[in-house]
Length: 182
Ligand code: B4P
Image (cartoon, rainbow, N blue to C red; front, top):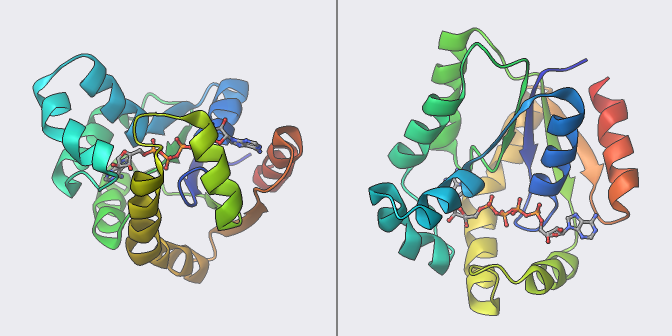
């Protein structure tokens, strides 16, 4: 079974949801950069103060700040890990490659959660997090298309990409992912 996984997809595709299910079932580390940044905001840390405005506008936090968070959490002690929301651009891909070479833990599979735009907009508006309003969602989608979507082709060329239809029942999506990582 694969132990080093990455979830890729637009905001609201279900990356966080599926990564949580899978990490719990396998006792893998679930590394969500978005979640870790929100924790910093909630704890009123210096980092939290630096990123709050950026996240609430739907923009990307600086590559350097996110890399620090990733380095702090990825280490050899993990039984396995799932990266959720990182990397989000090609510069982050390169930094991640460096980190993984040092750890000697190459990425084994990338799940691309595909979903029609109208479905994810509905999901995000229903969730209603601070950065889930119409204007912010529009910004997040634009940034996703411009900077994150090219990663699909990158990982496809490395033969790491697995396509997941993320428009459907949670359990069916989970089953599909589990079968593909076996
Ligand atoms: P994230 O926390 O990654 O937020 P997200 O893209 O919206 O995905 P999330 O995982 O939360 O949503 P999911 O699809 O699971 O990022 C937030 C912000 O942090 C970014 O905008 C950015 O500012 C910053 N950030 C994070 N990483 C960064 C990085 N690497 N570089 C720079 N900045 C970074 O779920 C959405 C909703 O759909 C949920 O309510 C869920 O319950 C529902 N849902 C899921 N699956 C479903 C299904 N099958 N059916 C029905 N509903 C479903």
